[in-house]
Length: 122
Image (cartoon, rainbow, N blue to C red; front, side):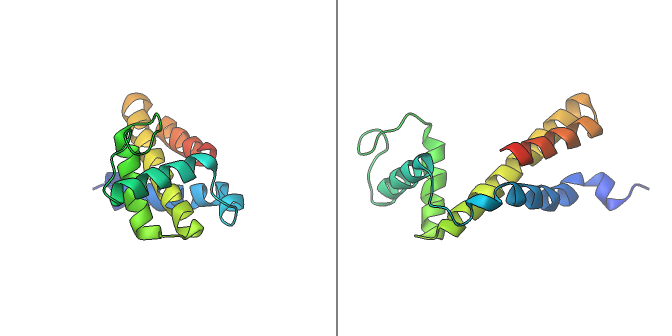
């Protein structure tokens, strides 16, 4: 019988990737938000106010990004720390997805390496 972590590596990997991603972004926790993040939050707020992306606020990204930032704006409000925490969570989840994809194609060791590198460099 396999151990629980071997059957469900994501449950072990996600906290580890959250830690790595949080440490890699440690310098950004108290800095002002970047230009891109501010634009995405503005368009998210436009959506929350009943506006339409591309008509009332323009940027060249896909609409799901703006909906995600509308959700982040709802939860975080004016808190830079909560916006950065949402970024860390989303990057850790993306790193887990990359790790799973690479592991399926090239083996578990390659998947772990890909997930760790994505978490550190995202």
